[in-house]
Length: 455
Image (tube, rainbow, N blue to C red; front, side):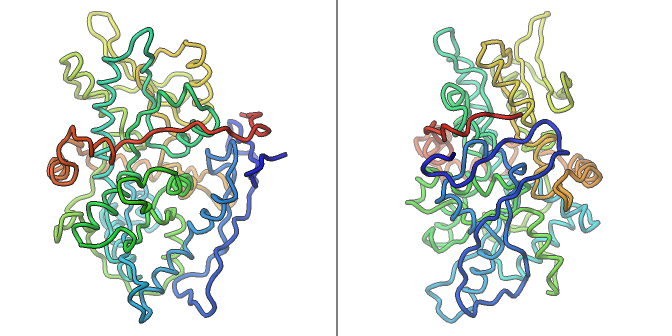
């Protein structure tokens, strides 16, 4: 039986991708009579329990209603409201695209990643979107703040104060699972830095809105992302404090949902360069961070820690696969002594092993990049699965090749990052940095009857 506030009971999938998916119908938002659906004809959304790490405890009824609004129908509703005469209902439409989504569009439409970005931007503008941004700059903030936090935790770690290992907070499925199911003390190891999606929400609804002299509620912000868990992340309580109660992200659409709209549209498209947060400037080149299939927190934090803590300059990072291809470790050694011991743990099998060893005090790592999806963010179920719900391995391999060829940009080299720290956040060590770029974690009482975890 379910808890009093639950309508969905979920058992986590086991180690393989080959088991039967169980799907849950998510109720569609009620549409106004006569509202047109001009751009697509999509079936009501279904969320596969295997798609999402967050379902191990439960989704509340209220969250279920809100999830039903995280759909293409809600996006189209806003597009159509903007065409009506009543200007009071008009919203400025902003779409932010995750860098791990671009290889999907490049592979899907047989384009270079730059041309895919321009095609996607042109299509969104043809629908009526006003601005299209890249979330790489939000990941810059997330990585830089994670770097500083790791060095601080390293200095504070002791027998009495177990601040290490630091576990990354960029993957919303993993974070939700840690909060809803694992709770204390695991959540004390979570990095307090907000995820790139959360930072992008603040950039759009706070910085950009003020630049445009707009109240946050007049901006409708859509994220295009590889996975469904980012829809749940958009609902996460407490991350809109810096914007007077305005939610940072109003709607998340997966890469696959956007591609379906594109395939069903007959609009003429003019390829367009992606916008930036800085006036009339346009993005000149697609860049990414140094990650295997993610925003690259491990690589960048490792280099920063090696330099700050031990004066070591690390150029090439060597990943060593251990028990399986989704668990890697990286070490810094000097005179036969291990100075830094980092790991990447992707997928539930490795998360489970990590938590078991962490609770037994037998986990030797200083830092772990944790991602819910095996093989990382490119394998998000919103873009890398077949119609029968299994991983599209050919497409995934193609996306990984495309992603690896995108030039890497160190976050500190971002031309506008220091400008944003000063103009938007009042300095790199200000109280506003803590308010806007960091979060706290809760460990609410999960549904008692639903914690028989099946791996």
